[in-house]
Length: 203
Image 1 (tube, rainbow, N blue to C red):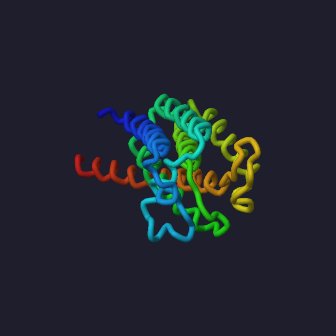
Image 2: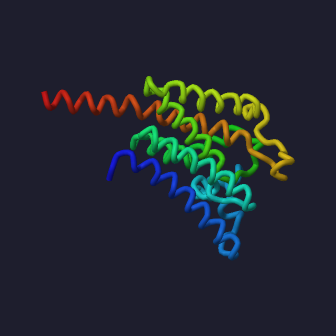
């Protein structure tokens, strides 16, 4: 498998799983309370760390998140996202949801938006690591930081959005971006140490 294939594979899988959950929900095969993350229940329902991001109640909500992740899939693939980038996103999938425990005001959560923000942070860091494409990293990363600053998820974790017609968990955007970036920054040095160790063994 090509090294750059892991990123589109994971992103595509997340989109397909979200669509599958939506279709299963329409058919009545998904019980939302068993899939949605609840601040007070997640310890007895730990699978919701993974299932909550895949759950959407409204088709436009799913479509918006899926299109955003699809765009980041294409951009990450064009930037030759590494297996480490995919692993960082894979870890951010449940850990971004887990980070919501830092905000007791967030009683529940569902939707792919946290994962989308994690992917955006990872793509920005990948572009920043490539000097010729640093401008793109600054553009994506700067736009992401401005969005997060305007949302103020650390102080306003949940707010009603009249455009969507439901409460938006801004804390999930902040948590997703932070965890995604944090995982990649943690994995990079570990990978460099492995490469250095491998070279020492060969020399």
